[in-house]
Structure formats: C-alpha cells, structure tokens
Image (cartoon, rainbow over all chains, first blue to last red):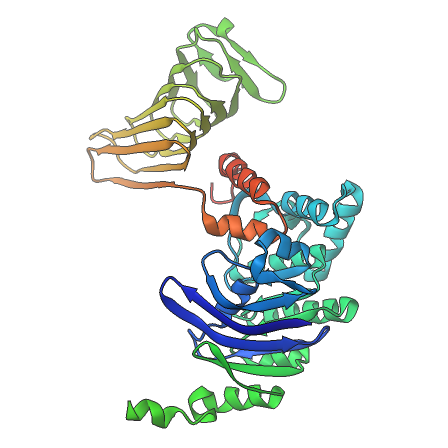
Amino acid sequence: MLQIKNLTVYVEDKKIIDNLSLEIPDGEIHALMGKNGTGKSTLCKVIMHDPNYVIKSGQIIWHNQDLGQMDPTHIAREKVFLLNQSPLAIEGVTNAEMLRMSLSEIKNTQIGIFEFHQKMQEVCQKLGLPQSFIHREINVGMSGGERKKNELLHMWMLEPELILLDELDSGLDVDAIETVASSIKEYYEKYKPTILIVTHHAKILDLLNVQKVHIMNQGKISQSGDKSLAMKIENEGFAKTFDISGLEQNE
Amino acid sequence: MNKIILDKEENILENVDGTIILNKLVKKIIFKGINIVTIAKVDYDLNLEIELLDNSSLDLKYFTWDDNTNITFKQNNNTNLLFRKSFYARKNSLIKLKNIIVGNNNKSNLKVRAISYKESISIDVLLDVLNSSKDNEVIEDLKGINYGGLVLIKPNMEINTSEVLANHYVTISSINKDDLFYLESKGLEPKISEKLILEGFLKGIMEVKNDE
C-alpha cells in the first residue's frame, strides 16, 4: 500500500502541499484531479523525491519504507516509476544503454544482451514503436506522443510496482490516448501494480477502469469518490462541482 | 577519400573505416567531392587549413582530450561543411576556429561540445562571410559544461553581406540537475548518471541527426 501521511512540501518559501494524506491499497488505480497549480504534479515528483522540493513534515510509506528519507535511485529500486508530464530528452544516451544499466543495478546482476534485446523488441512491437527506438537517444527528436510511448517502453522494461502517471494524456490525440491507455491496461492486467494517475480528463479514467478519484485543491485532498466524480467535473467544471464560484466572486 | 588533396600526401594515413590519421606536418587539406571524415589520434596541437573546392561537401568530426586547436576553413561555391568537435579538457586549452566564406550558396555548421574538468577552456569561433558572397547559410552551435572548470565561448560573426542566413547558439552550464534526477529516477546511481550525461553530451553531436 502507498500511504501518504500528513505531507507538507515547500518550494523555496512557498507551500505547495499542505498536510496531505492519501492511501492507495496495493493493486488499485486511483486518479488525482484538480485545477492547474493545486500541487498534483508536485505530489508525483515528491514521491520520487525530486530534490527541487523540500518535505517539511509527513511521510510517504511504500514497502514499509519512508520514501521521503530515500534518494531517487533507491526509490526506483523499490519499483517506483514516474512518467513525467513532459519527459526530458537526454542527448547522447540511448534507451538501450540506460535501461540495460538500470536493470543491472536494480536486479544486481548482469543482463544478458540477447534476452534484453528480445524483450525490447517485444515491447516496441506492443507499443507500435519502430525497432530503431531501442537505440534512439532518450526522447531526443521525438514528438510529445512518441515521448510518452518511449516512457512506457521504460515502464515495461523496468517492471515497476508503483506507477505515477503525471498527465499521461496531455498533448496526445484521441488515438494516441487509446494506445497508451490500452498499454497501461495490459501492463496492469499482467503485473497488477498500484497506479496513481494525474489527469484533467475523465476519458482516460474510463479506459483504465479507475477505482477511486481524489480531488486536489490548494495542496490538499478536498474530496474523494468514484469515477462519477470525474464525470461530474468533466461536465460541469471544478467551480460548479464544488460550488466555489460564489467564493471567488465575493473575493 | 581519394578526393583529398594534400600539400604533402605522405603525411596523411587513411584507415579502412574512413578515419584519417594526420601527421603533424600536415598544414593544409583541400577537399573536393563528397567527404565524410573522422580524424583519429590527435595527440598534438592541431594547426590546420582546410579548403572546400566548388561543389564539395565535408562532414568532419573528432574527439580530443586536452589539445589546443587552430583550424581555418575556406568555403568556395556550392559547398557544405559540417564540423563536429567534442572535447574534454583536463588542462587549460584553446580552440580557435575560423571559417571564411568567399563564394555563394554555401552551408556551414560548426558544432563544438566542450567539458572543462578543473581547468579552463576558451573557444574562439569566427565566421567571416565576405561582402561579395550571397545565398549562404551559416550556423555556430557551441555548448560547454563547467565540470569543476570553466568554459569560455566567444561566438563571433563578421557578416559583410545582407544575403546570408546566420544563426548562433551558445550554451554554458553545469550538469543539468533535472537530467540527473531523470536518470536517477530510473534506478541509476548519481555517479553513473553523471557519467552518462557527460559522455552523452560529447557523443550526442557525433550522431548524424535527420535535420543535418
């Protein structure tokens, strides 16, 4: 289970996450929604212990360890995987180079080249990526959609048990959303990971069969519910759903 | 490769894989036709003139440690030059590149990637487009990483004609912390991540990209 207990996070002097608590039981898919700037992406990065953010208080418990006390390398080795909203491009470092090294480190053993390439080829095929992606530099010269698929290639190779999907669907066309969603669904059915997905759209929640939806507002979880909550937001917007438009007018 | 014209042909060795080994005595190389060249084993300060004859192209690349380089290019008409140099300096070094565009319809792309380890690197680049020339495209693409040392880049352009497309890109930075976080979040140790980023920075321009 992923347990976030009373988490407060700052960037410089600004409080981004304010005493937030959240639990995701093993093997469940939960969604995090909310207006822009409410701290959703920050939460994903903080779970991965991005050094740009400072945890002032609280705990993030996964596999009985506090991720807040661990570095990103060891968090990844606890089978946690972050798919960023805008995946970075790393010039001169290929997918194969990084993944083979990562797998060797994670599994603490040399990875056979034949077995590795065979799996890379299978995953590329699954994602509809050309085989050339195996030796492409990480996300260099790739479109937004290709970058997301390239990150899914990493996910399939590293076989994480906790997956943080930060706006997987942003910048993707309808067909691409279905492709990535079906890949995640297939992964979920095979490995039953725990997934936290940050999104603005109910469509991907439908495709992934999300069990619970949490709404984030001003650094806190303001409401939780089932998928119908996401549908309501999609149809009516945050302001109307939570009846905060009046408050905004009074201010 | 048989199209290389030298002042003294005995001073150049060509390997089967297309790399050339230069002798210190080589001071000038004239290229005609299409040439893809990797210079190997430069273990001395390179001081060279390179000329591209009309309708020629040259894709020249090499990696060095710690050298001082002084290369002057000359492009005539309808030529295409892609120069790529990656460089890791452990002592004070100076790279001087000059490209004189004398004719028309040439393309020039000078790319340098430099990492300074403890000491300083000075990179002086001058693109000189003469006033009688036209329809030329010139790019300076120069990047440095301060890795305990200091990179200084002077991207100069002397454009004496209005009929030219000229761009320059210069970046000097430390290792990007977001890049480090990205690789660490895939399970790599910080030291290994750092090494991959540095190697990737130097190797990156050695790959021919689609836009080139």
